[in-house]
Length: 108
Image (cartoon, rainbow, N blue to C red; front, side, top):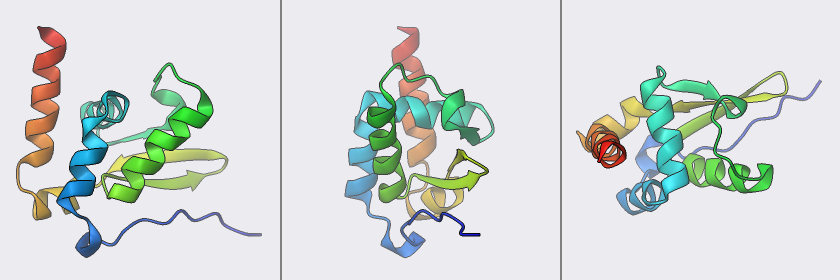
């Protein structure tokens, strides 16, 4: 039985430019805000982005490759979780500031 494993950057490989690029897209920011609000973990099917599956896959891949999220398979489902510990260690306060700013934007 083969286990599908997705590639993630090591914490030392996470770059601020890649993280900011990933967070700059409204769809990807929505994923991050959802994960932050729901304990940091959720399956792709739980987050309704209102886009095609291939477009959603693209957004999750950008987040994963930037080091913002991890993705693991549980059965056939991909489970996404924030790399909060890594991001907070590398860029203190960034994730909280971005999520707070996004929440303010939605309320306006």
